[in-house]
Image (tube, rainbow, N blue to C red):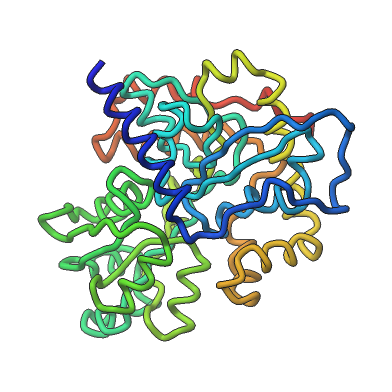
Length: 352
C-alpha cells in the first residue's frame, strides 16, 4: 500500500509540474488539417496522454494531432510532455493520464513492481540514442570515429555522462553500453540526471558533463555547433539495434475496459507512422513546425534515423532484446523477463 501511495503521489506531482511549468512544445488537441479526414461527425472522445520527452523521436505524437489522425479516429487528445519515460509511466498509475507515449523499458519495470501496463502500439523498435562526447574531452582522450567500438566506449572512463533520469532508457542504455566493456557506474564513470535532451545539450556546452546520451537530432546539433563529437551510436550494438523503444502504453485494466478507445489510439499511431515513413515530403513540414527550435536540415537528418515502426507494429524479438538489457543491468530477473511477451500486443492495430 505504501508503494502505491508513493507512485500515485509522484504521478500527480509529475503531471501537475508538466502542465504548469513545461516550456516544451505541446500538441494542440484542436488542431485540424486536410491530411486526415474525420471519419464521422460524432463527438470526439477526450483523452490525456503524457509524453516521455518532447523530442523528434516522439514526432508521431505531435504529428498525429497536427495532421489530424487523432481527430480522424474520433479522439481529442491533450498531450503533456514530461522529462523522462519513468516519470510518464507513473502518471498511468495515478490515473492522471490514460496513455503514455513512453518507452518499453517502463512497461517492464512497472511489471517487476506489480503494476500491469501494456504497449498497444510501437513508435520505434530500435534504441536510437547517441553518446555525444564534448570536443575537449574527446581530444584529451584521443577519441576519433575511426577507432573500434570497444576503444570508443573505454575512452569514456572517468567521464560525467548526462542522462534524463535514473531508471530511464538513457540510464539503462549507458549502463548496458559501457558495461559491455567492463566499465561500472560510480566506479569508472558517473551519470548525472539532467532532464530533457535540450538541458543535456546545455550542460554539455557549459562543461558540466563530458558526455551525454540523447537522440540523433540533438547529437547532430551538438556536432554542428562544434560542442561535441559522436562517440557511439546505440545501434552499433546488435541487441540495442533491434530492441523495443518508443511505445504507446496504457494500463492493462484500462485496455480491457475501453477496447474501442484503445483501438482508436492504436490506429491513429499506425496511420501517423505510415504517413511519416511513406509520405515524408508531406510529413516534414508538420515536423519542422512542431520542432521549430531545431533546424530543418537537422530534422531531415534525424527523422529517418528513428526507423518509425511500420503500422506501429512491434515484435517479440524486439521485446526480448530490451528485456535482456534489463537482465544484464540487474534491473530484472530472468524469470521476470520471461513474461515479456505478455507486455505488448498488436491486436488493436489495423491489418497491414
